[in-house]
Each structure stands twice: as structure tokens, then as C-alpha cells.
Length: 406
Image (cartoon, rainbow, N blue to C red; front, side, top):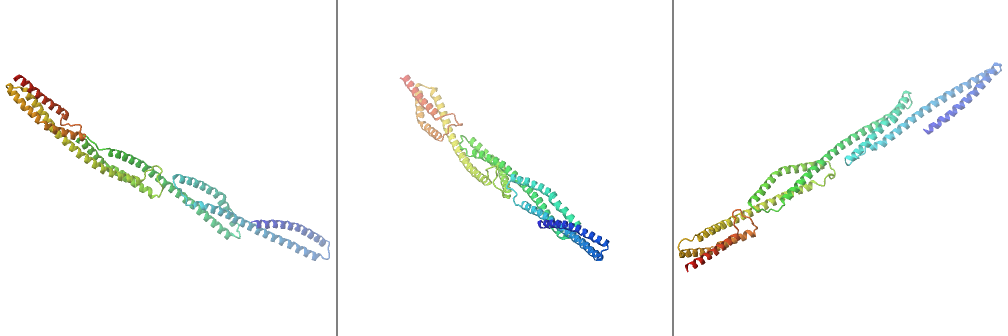
């Protein structure tokens, strides 16, 4: 371009020089015509030389015009090629953007890239007016003027436009890909949030269940242990719902992992941790089953002890009551009464073994911390006191009878 501009400047100077020489040629021809008009004897030779001079000046002018036209055509061609190169260079610079494999790491980064893409597309539309339309108009101007380099111009223009169209296509493709990635990350965000919500609810349920099932199993009656076993059976029946929740979490985790993304930013619970929790729960349930079964056996044994104690205690109390009544009856002669009381006193002393049996059973109940007994209202201490009182009563009655007989 600079060389052509230099040649055009030289040609302008050359044309100025031709103009100056043209004036001088005109002056010479006018002088020659004056000699011819004065009938100079060289008139024919002067006329011939003037004609030759005018022809040469005319030919020189025509050659100068052709030269200028060629220079201008070449300048226009080079200017078109330069502008086409500038456009192609701009396109090449932008191709790196549309061919980038950076599509974001999360929803926020993808949205940032989409904003950049929108700005990029605005730049493309602006350049289409400033660059593409300019070289299109220049190309049409050169082709319509039947430029000698029309073939090269058309070829260059076609290459640039083809590259421009590829850039537009790649840009649209990148935008579409970013939108797809954005939708994908939105789906992942939704899966993250759903998993976090369900995982939190599942863990809360587990913690409550664990707390309930790790409470010490200690009951005071068969009714209590049976109530606990019934509640445990109901809990086990409800595990189907919990298992469905666990399977739902596993499916969500599988979906999330299919996207090959990082850890869930909305929860610290992982599927692996929840799987361990679920496995631990099964172990806790088995342990609870065993503890409840053992406690039921213990309560059944305790209830047998209560019944055995009650049987002996109630019978002993009945004997005490009947014996007291018989001692207080006092029928017959004094001697007969004394004999009857002696027999009863001997019987009372003999029933001490029954009391010891009751005391042994009471000690066992106390050792096993069985402090209540719904089968009887009598206690070891109370029965022992009543037996002692009955023994004392027999001794007093005998003493009184003996005093009366004397």
C-alpha cells in the first residue's frame, strides 16, 4: 500500500510536469504557426515537426492516463485486500473465544460466561456493520467496475465471508452449549437441594430412632415390656417408609454423580455416610430386639416370683387370721381352752418355717429390685410382725388361763 501511494504521488508530479511541458509545446507550436504564416521557406518542415510534437504530447498524455488508471486500480485492489486482511485478522482473534472449551464449573460461572457471550454477540453485530458491510461494498464497487483483479477479489471475499459465517455459527453454537450447560447446572442445583433436604430429614429421623432404641430397657411389669415390644414392632413396620426414603436418596445421589460434579455444597451428608447410618440402624434394631426379648424373659420370671410370693403370703395371712380368731374364741372349760391354746401355740411355732420361706422369697424379690406386687398387699415385714404378735397373743392367753386355773 505504501509503495502504491508513493507511485501515485510520483505520477501526480509527472502529470504536473507534462502539463508544464504541454504549455511549452503549445508555445512552440504557436511560434511555428507564426513562422508558417510568415511564409518561412521551412514552413513544411516546421508544420511537420509541430504535428509530431503534438502527437507525442498526446500519446504521452494517454499513456499517463493509462498509467494512473492502473495505479488507481492497483491501489483499490490493495486497499480491498488490506481491509479484507484486517477483517480476517479480527475474525481469527475472535475464533479463539468461540472455540474455547471453558463452559463453567457451576451455575454462577456459567451465567458469567453467558453474560460475556451476550457482550461478544453485540460486538459481532457491530463489526458486521463496520467491517463486513464495508468490504462488501468495496468488493461490489470493484467488481461492477470490471476490475482486472476481479477473480482474486472474489476469491478473497468468499474466503473472508466463509470464515465470518463460521464465526457466527460457532458463536451461536457456543451460546447454545452454554444454555444447555446452564440448564444442566440448574438441574444439578435442584438435585443438590432436594438431596440436602431429604438427607437432613432422614438423619433427623435416624437420630430420634437411635435415641429411642438405645434407651436402657428396664421395665417393672410384663405390661410395660409388652408395650415396648408392641411399639418396637410398629417401628419395624414403619421401616418400609424409611427404606423408601433411603432408596430415594440413593437414586438422587446416582443422578448427581452421573454429572461428574463435586461435593454437595448444601449439606455435609454423603450417601456413603447415610448408607453407614442405615446399616448401623439395622444393627441397633437387632440389638434392641435382643434386649427386649431378654427383658420380657426377665419380667416373666419376676412375675412368677411375685405370684409365688403372693401365694405363700396370702395363704400365711389367711392362716394368721383364722388362727387369731380361733385363739380368741375361748369355748369349753378352762382346761380345754388351755389345751387348745397350747396346740395352737405349737402350731404357730411350727409355721415359722413358712414365714422363713416367705422371707427368703421376699429377699429374692428385693435383690431383683421387685418392689411392687399387684398379686398381694402383704409384705415380709408385715407378716413377720403379725406372726410375732400371734405368738405373743398365744403366750398371754396361756398365762391368763393358767392364772385362772390356779
